[in-house]
Length: 197
Length: 197
Image (tube, rainbow over all chains, first blue to last red; front, side, top):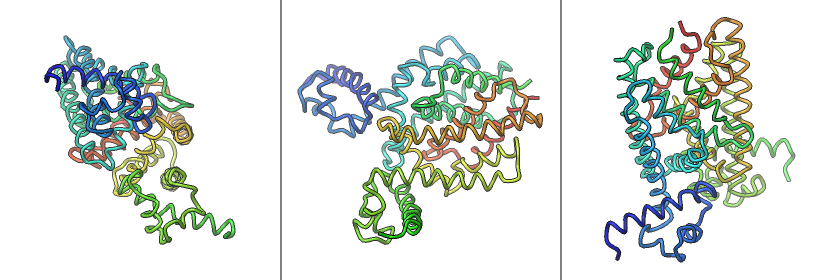
């Protein structure tokens, strides 16, 4: 049995490799055998770290969510209100290769919430954290007079979260994906609407 | 072999029963056996209508999408521009028991698009139809001076579609689902933003 710290480092290394395979091939299609190969382990050697496929998929979602949140934290540092809101949401949009790959994990995860209470609660907790942070930034925007619209803050926050989640579907469409330019224009339009003339 | 018309009627009857089971239990969890029982058929008697589970799930999505579009058509009759936009989007929001059930089908369907090109193309075609119709209504809104915002029409349309899709995730969360009241407030806020003061 490896030491606890080594174990957590190794676990994160496995996740950093396997989530990309799940994103590319689909979380359901990717097999434990392929993921073990990708992680440089003999088949079955993932077992000390993950009890099974469900546990690995769940850990991959948490890993991707942590990745996104780390990026958001770095992007928001030193900003407040409206400019922090912009920086936060840019990191969530599936407008780059990396965030498009993340959307390919988030979408199957969201779908599992329909039939799986554990996944639903994880997703719920993740969205509650986002709402809480966005609500704080909207309140700062009010203080700075960058948010002057009559709409209540919780409705504004929900609009921003819904737009980001909806784009995770639309950006992956094969024939008419929402382009990065359109996504950024949507974001600017949403932020402009916070202070109507 | 039943006559073609009877066959289509029977096929629709089966779908009207089975999609609700898929929505309740999850499309993956519901078995062909259960769905046959629900449809009043002996196990296996779905075979003349659907070659297998994938075909049934695909047909259920198309069925649900047709249901939504029929409802939209009826709601929009005799309306134009902004009031037609409102009527359209109200039918899409997961704000009623029926539309929440529909969201429970749409979400797993969207998720399958990640790994399944056929599902991705179906979803793409569905979203293209919505965009086309919404673009027409936004253009009417411009004629009526109910839409005056600077944002280009295709960006506005994408914002409306993304919000509707995002709500299909948020309204299903167990701990903090977006309430019907908040959804309707989001819609009004989005429509108000089309003509800033």
